[in-house]
Image (tube, rainbow, N blue to C red):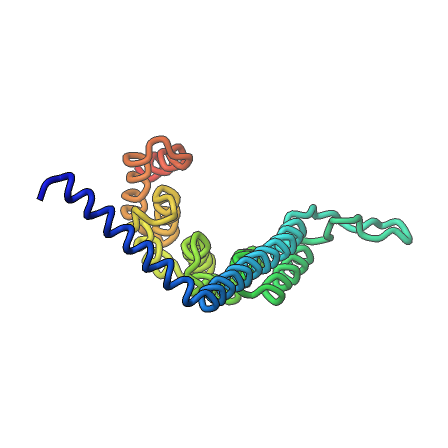
Length: 239
């Protein structure tokens, strides 16, 4: 078949198809209109759901910001003058500030449990518990965030968990966790930050050679790291 004839055939096939589709649309006009209407409703619902969820995330984010402001508030002893109370936006002790921050973070979790802000709030609660020396509560909190499997919170919570285990004197458990993390070179955590923690955990456990190996990796593999200077000093002290 010549190219001209093939081209003409294609045109005829296209014309026939167009006529057939047009006829079907006329015959099923009501059905088509209904389908279009349903599609419009679905899109409207989807758009409404998006804006509803976005609105919830925004509100959750505001609460999270308020809680973080409390956690970063200044510590100021109460005035000894009669009738003068605590200065606004300050707390008399770290304990009082931590308790207030935890309460505020819990509001985020309670009001918007499925939001990303709630995951961040759970992490901050665990971190605050750690600061207050409540190792059991901190461990449970970090493990809860890890179970959420939402990055970067889950991976960061593994570092927090390792720090908690170290603080509780469970150095071997911390070392195992950090060793696993240091092998995840494509993970969300910077390997140099994991290695410096691993080195410190080994040093705390009295494993000087393992600590030296971790510090050396920081120096050799991440010479531009913010931890490189600390690693060099630690190596000099070990040697």
